Image (cartoon, helix red, strand yellow):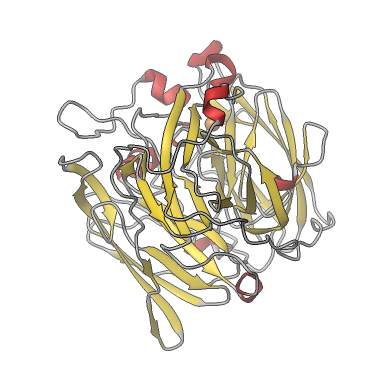
Amino acid sequence: MALAAPALLRPRPAGAALTGRPFVQPALDQGRIEAGRRVFGLAVATGSHDFLDGVETATIGVNAGFLGPILSARAGDALRMNVANGLAEPMTLHWHGLHLPAAADGGPHQEIAPGATWSPEFDLRQKAGTFWFHGHQHRKTAEHVWAGMAWVIRVSDDEEAALSLPRTHGEDDFTLVLQDRRFDASGQMPYDANMHDRMAGMQGDVMPVNGRPSPVLDTDALRVRLTILNGANGSFYRLHFADNRAFHQIASDGGLLAAPVPLREALLSPAERGEYLIDLADGAVATLRAEAFGAEAPVMGSAGIREVMTFRPKTAHPAPPPLPERLAELAPPPAPTGETRTFTLSMSGMGMMGDFLINGRQYDHGRIDFSVPKDAAETWVWENTTPMIHPIHIHDVQFRILDRGGRPPAPHEAGLKDTVLIGSGEKVTLRLLFDDYADAVLPYMYHCHILEHEDAGMMGQFTVV
Ligand SMILES: [Cu+2]
């Protein structure tokens, strides 16, 4: 992000005229308990949603036209997900960030036929954190997610519950799904990816937050916790406040950081999550903004700055409440016990018009690229030789970043991760532990989470045996 112009550093006065509609916080769904198992029903169907005031846009939704309830569960829960495919085409639903058996992963090998229900059961072996689920149908992921087939799972645990943090859902604890979409003249958002979209990732000029562009929230809270998912197909968001205020990151993809990390901007790649604490005690209006850009940013630069949402404090207070000094016990990355593998991201052909490859190959649904011995702690080195940036997601594990471009990870990247940005020309080293689950046949995926790149074949698969 460029330095803000001086005029932007001054807080807007409270009560200044703003035109956005109220922020929408979807309810929490705690499922139902059946024989000691927490059961969620997820009905996937076509529907509609009013992203734009007074216009119904056709969607694919999960338990709603677009804004399904947020799934809420506790670490250690035994889960069953009843996923009912109400579409006229096959689909899958992948539990992004969850450590689970390959048969329950919801990747391209767990296809659900039209009219069928898929009911995986698995234990929730996570720390408190924010996870999500989205369509992962082979070559249809981008189209399905664009239409709305994605939402959030929030996981709580005792360690998080013992901390003095905002956690009243919808009062001082807000879950935000950031996306961008483009609409045609009739207010519809057909998935009409052109050549540029397939290269750079599909982006839109309207940025819904929980399905509503630039919403406004009037709040009594002196401090809010924002749990943010970048749910975009192809957009990266560099989040910051219009008044350049400082805030703190407290969690990354897989759970709490060791301690709050002060920031003035936070970059979220597609599929990444972050949790942030924002002080509102001064009573000034706080406008969260995002500089949006696509995979081609190293060449083409930013797509512009978008207003994400505005917080209007109802009250002022002499001082914000104190922050916790420590958050979670974060063990060091596991010591290596397995192989070191190198993954080179490349493009075939000339310039920007080639195919997207990992180690020189496109995804092949019938090819397992390699097998990892169960319980191995492996080292994966990712090298990006393309002129683009790629967020790499690895199924099954929460991994740790050991090294980014020859340096240790920044504090906000030093925690649990399942998606990591690999910059153009950059080399990033990860440590991953493949424990608990093995399956000789069914694989897990690793892929670029720019969904257009994934669908174009920037994906591979491995088994844990
Ligand atoms: Cu990519």
